[in-house]
Image 1 (cartoon, rainbow, N blue to C red):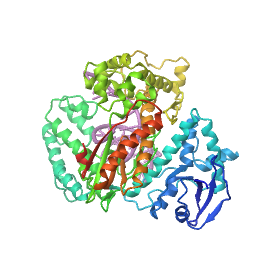
Image 2 (cartoon, rainbow, N blue to C red):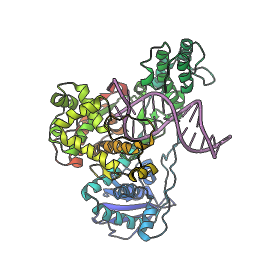
Image 3 (tube, rainbow, N blue to C red):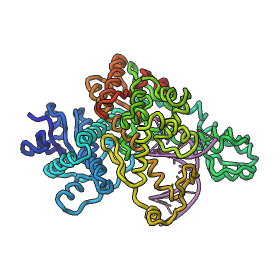
Image 4 (spheres, protein in one colour):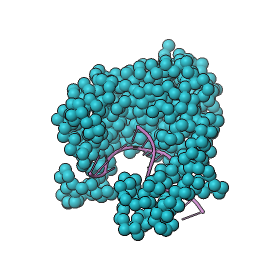
Length: 561
DNA sequence: AGTTTCGGCGCC
DNA sequence: AAAGGGCGCCGAAACT
């Protein structure tokens, strides 16, 4: 008996299937069955399904109530393998992979679709061309060999498996939806924005604030038009380059207060207002389209609905079903803990081995107890801050945690020089395409960029490209390795929930939400803790680093913080 | 008239 | 005090 099978859906709703051996090669003939979902349902002993595309297959299985334990997504693996091999620009469809294998013309990838509001299932549609199972098997076998040639084959195998698991989670979340009370949402909108006026214009509160802004300037000003606001400030004798919050808020002018309030509420109105509710909430569920591995760093994205940017005030509308609860879990200081694990810095690992506030521990060691300074320094190191207090504090950080800072510094250097940069599991940051300016610099033609540490940051100045790539790479190793860990955490949590009525309903980088009967809540809380520990061991091996979560069992998302 | 980019801001 | 990383979304502005 074998636990791994390959599967390819056919045009007519049927499927081709083949059992695979431990080496990934078929150990039996390809068989043809008339019903895709039934073919899977009737083989509960299969623990991993190998298929071209999870978005192509899995929603159709879920629609008939069939879940699978694990899968291997060939096109997702192709993307990760190409990236790892430094070939991220090449087409990643299975058809393209086959063409490379057989030496034919390589078809370009089809363009990505964007989501339609309120789209009915299936939320995903097939993106690439189908392949006969025999061809898929050839691509799969070659991918197995490519894993063997990776820098760390075992980690690369873990990465493709983890991201395939993530795609299962995403598909299941897309099907479940996030419990959402339209009534509460409307209440919140009314409290914040006031009544709506007929005709779709601004609601009352926004109209009032716009009037206050105009009164303060002594002429009609539309606060939603940056150009208008800049002009109005200029006429009042105040020069501003933009209307960004941080630039406006320090200005002493009566228009500032209503203007900032307007911008805050305007944002709610346009991005999460009544039309959003109309578009995205159906039958008590918000159904965004989660996409695992949608970014180069491995973070997820959502397609439509802005699910990863739900404003805090709107979270009041996320309410569990009667008799159910939301278990909301937030990883504590994930980035510095990940930095400790990937850099193996002894001091930082020691600090990250505690479950207590990491920034406080860092500040006790390097910043004489000033937690804010410690946090700024750590985040500055991770994000590549180039000036200000973060840079000053970086020196203190470097003295106490030299290996950690050296790790991100080396990533930044590699990024600047156009070398490949990888996460712990082997997800790879593509080297940026060289610009003409890069070539000019290499040829010795000065581009105006000084190497001094205290040089001015010039927004939009093209010769900062190399520096920008350095910052990207610096952040990539931390953010991306965190994404590696998060995928394994989700996979483990998903397996625990499989035995319960509990459903994963939301995931946002370092935060996960489970909707479950209230009797299961404590079981889920424990499962999250175990999943975090297991993910830490699987991802980073034996380190003292812990990954604690702050967990809340609530009926309303807004009560979790 | 339709499509792309920009400015600003929400989340992490 | 200064303005670092990743995203998505919206309307307006800037284009074809």
